[in-house]
Image (cartoon, rainbow, N blue to C red; front, top):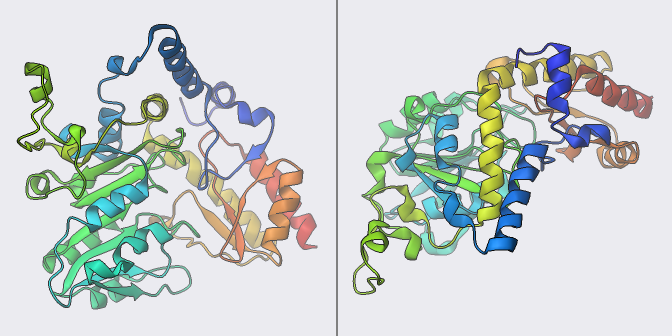
Length: 381
């Protein structure tokens, strides 16, 4: 797809039926499903209905595609239900000596923080405060010390789209013997990512936002060198070496021989239907290319930013592209009321942090951005 010649964009938009019904600019919440994803799920359901379980036809359920999207190896990827499960797995595998500290920020989604607020872990949480929607690397450096067990953050912050520099953070974290745990639900699929280059330890994302997938499908990356050092907090038949089942007609219930890959962090049967949809969605995104998707999204968010500034609205999103993502947030006088008003006109955005959060994907158009901002202008006058 040569981004973006209008004839190609029109072809892409035909894969998204939502474009015929709404101006949908809310991918940071839950995305509409493209036609190829719906068709893949429908085919699975049809086969399951006519011939019984069809899950055996689908081997890795998107692991390979997710690995390509984030620059990981196949054996470093596990299937999980959602991002919150991945964060809990990470939290419950770490060791917490007396005085242990977890460093995070005051911009985080609850799921990034809640696992460490449990009293049984005994860890103290240190919140690095944002300044005008940005988290300073200097402030992170001051917060991380030798008592730090982990830094737990979102790659992209959900309220305003601030993007952390993972490479710099991992260097800082590893200097103190800690690990970097990253919730990537707001970034994967919208930009090139390389967890090996950035030296991330744990990295997880669900598919129902920017990955254009059904709810119930998510993926957990665990750095290869850590996998066999860690005992999963939960285990089941999916946690063990699957060769046992291929070479014997019985289950070995006397020994726990955990998989040597990240599949040791899987517990039981996955939601196959959702993962089939996620696999198809990721194939679409890989076909377009994350660099092209990023370029397109940045062009659209540039337009939101320019329009918001023209209207005199205060931006809550960093303007520098090194800290940007697919999310733009600007303040309005009554954001909740405005979101409801826009929804009546079939324009979908979110209210977050006393502002309007706009999150377009690569299939959106400049005209859709203009439609949104014209309505914002009317509401603010």
